[in-house]
Amino acid sequence: MLIHPTLDKLQRLQLTGMRKALAEQTDLPDIDDLSFEERLGLLVDREITERDDRRLKTRLRQAKLRQQAAIEDIDYRHPRGLDKALIASLVNGAWIKAHHNILITGPTGVGKTWLACALAHKACRDGYRVHYLRLPRLFQELPIAKGDGRYPKLLAALAKTDVLVLDDWGLSTFTDEQRRDMLEILEDRHERRATLITSQLPVEHWHEIIGDPTLADAILDRLVHTAYKINLKGESMRKRKSKLTHTPDSE
Image 1 (cartoon, rainbow, N blue to C red):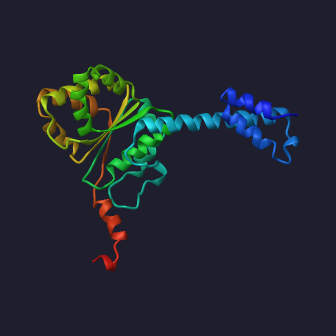
Image 2: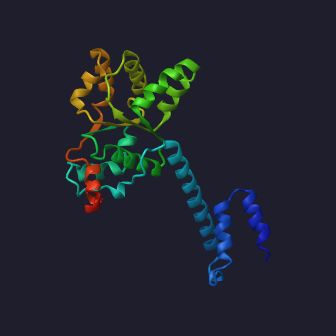
Image 3: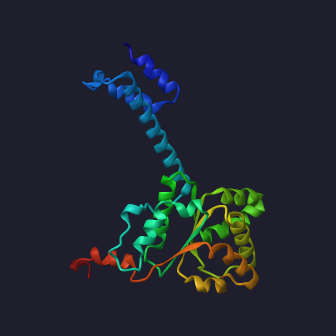
């Protein structure tokens, strides 16, 4: 049997996984021991795997996660108050299906962003659309979007994102425009999508940093009441890493 025409046709049909698997099968010495159904099943399995991998790569590229992080690599040895049972309960993604939020707080360097990216990475692996944004950058982008007419489209895109990661919440007091923009974003997502926020400020101080009491109440009402709270503590993990790489010659 001439296999090359079949390989060419699979390529034209963009069945690249099946094409690779079929080419590999021709080099296996015991492949004739398998039935037609078994060989076909292997081809289909390979195609599904290839397509799943491509979709995951696309989701990760679109997510723009700041750090490469995975749930499996979480360091529970470093004393920072990380609840292993809580993390285990979040891994299954039920919080995303229920449209709940996660609020990660703690001092600089304890791994807030890394943990957020690990949870977001797991969401990508589970098939969810994720987008990472530093809140200061978002607040810079929104006025520009209003000026060039992209504002409605930007809000619509944020509203459709399954998991929105807002990093560095509360580095400065919100302006009136920022308060109103944030309320619009969270109103679109409330009980429809999941939001993950990291902040150096404890949650009880967020009302003050948002500013206007009425808008602060409205914003926090859409965030806090359906949120899992992770409060990290302890010494900066960056400082710990610097100790590990310290040598006498560097003194």
